[in-house]
Image 1 (cartoon, rainbow, N blue to C red):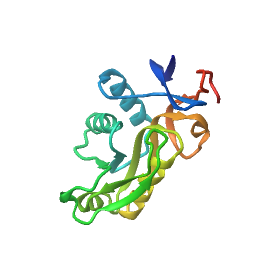
Image 2: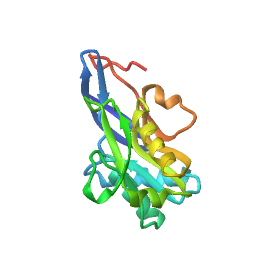
Image 3: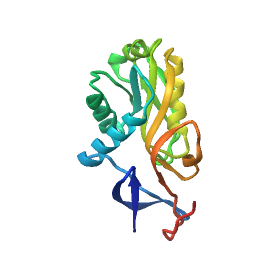
Image 4: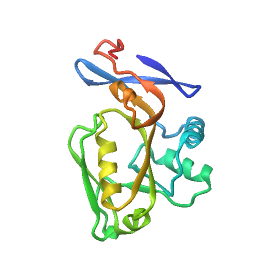
Amino acid sequence: MNYEVDIAGYKKTLKLFKVSDDLQIAAFILYGDVAVTQHAARELLARAPQFDIMLTSASKSIPLIYEMARQSGMNDYIVALKSQKVYMGEPLSADVNSITTFQRQKIYIGEDDVEKMRGKRVLIVDDVISTGQSLAALEKLAEGAGGEIVGKMAVLAEGDAYDRTDITVLGKLPLFDGEGNILR
């Protein structure tokens, strides 16, 4: 089963995947889709507040944040990783339990990334906001690094996340029951 989503005027067909027996999601994957990535980056930047640095988490939103940095003429952005790397020094970490991941994870930013955010206006960017758990983890990292969060953006908001007033998104992604019918 498929669902056609409207991303600020760009139509994309998404395949439905089961999360449980009575819940399916439409999988929005930016990997390999240059056109939608460029469109979404342009539209998000047009709505973005003034910022100094962008932050996202690995991995599906990396093409988006890269393209936003490229279009805005920036040379720097930060990606919170799902594992600690030797080059991070003493990293900051935050717990996250995403709807698309089966277990609790940690995300990390290294000492250099902390320095890039300290005292800066941070724009948090994601591909899809659903439960808000990934977003909350990114907020914790930005605040822990001494950054000032000036905006939270995503291409799509899933389910009730679309009604949040603290995020900027380009479109709504409904949730689906086990038969593929829209829940909300």
